[in-house]
Length: 524
Picture 1 (spheres, rainbow, N blue to C red):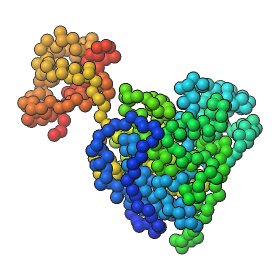
Picture 2 (picture 1 turned 120 degrees about the vertical axis):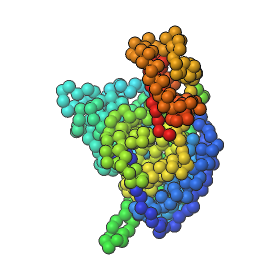
Picture 3 (picture 1 turned 90 degrees about the vertical axis):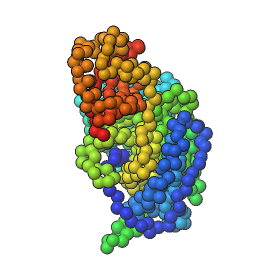
Picture 4 (picture 1 turned 45 degrees about the vertical axis):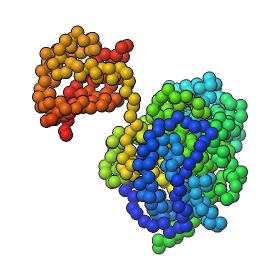
């Protein structure tokens, strides 16, 4: 199913008319313990939001007639809260919990992309290799135009191979064999675009990626992903084939059929067996298990010198999360408070990326198949993520996850994780403080780049700074340096009349010198 990027809606409140299981705090220690940002107060501050989070999920379960819903909150690499409502099996009244195993549909795609990156990191393929090197059947592919480039592995990972969007057709191909996939390719594939020019969501493309993993690793892609990624993360309950899942853990899929007059009934959707298209949407997992994968993605930020002992390099995880293909602009998007907040979106390697009007970056993926709907999303700068599963056809859980994240940030007063201040940035701040406001011997100080004074003379700079100092009055406090990166930042000078924001950025030289310096009065 095509992922839904954040379309943020104000959710109505209602009561759940189904059996529910209370949410519960969770402690777990996965096989792989990722390096995490630690602050004992950060998670604790979120606890006041948990009852509201539970109500948001409870309400959406009733509003959308979801038979069973499970959710989890992952903070700084740990599953800190999870729960479930309703049933995974309506006939047996099996409660939905964080241990229930749901088919997560297109949330699977990022694991397939991660497998490709792991093989790339091992030197076994290149992302810009033509896909036909690994799928010879593509050599006979008829491109849309004579000047079209060959489809690359990267094109398949970023939905830019030129294939048409294939929902909901792709959802019904899950159990196709490898032979079915290759026969489809040999028979000819229709093109929507030439490769590399447009985003067009393609389940077929990810089925091809699964085949590439199989060819390169010399073992079925399911086995490779399980051995190389799932097991090292401790995702021991996760499966590809539903018949291998214990009946008391397996979530069955349903669709809601409206019978008129405001009533309806659930109809069970037949489960599809695992096959070649499982690489695009076949994984079956729990909140408990998948939280370990989410933790891996959270642990990639911020970049650090910590031991890199995950199944895939942290740099490769960050690479997955970049917007490699532009996918859209929602100019009329609204946040969970109903306020207009435009969102731009892109697609990474098996992951959706978005950035809203407040500058918040979200990374994750939704999923949908007949009988199921799911979504996970992290805010990398905040070290926080949410996961939600429902056993209803295309349940559509992106909006409620957005509301949950907004709630956690607001009530928990969650702030972005602060970058460490580099030694040179701190040194240049100290150098500046000594010079201001008189600029005595500034040209001989050796802290400014060669462009600095030709851009504006020391006399003009002295005059401008002394004017802003006069407005501020006596400087009472010099604020902490707030870095934007290792070579750019700002700090506040708090006067008895006004506050001055001092921004500066350094050159690529070593040692780095000040190339730009700006002063502005800021409101109290």
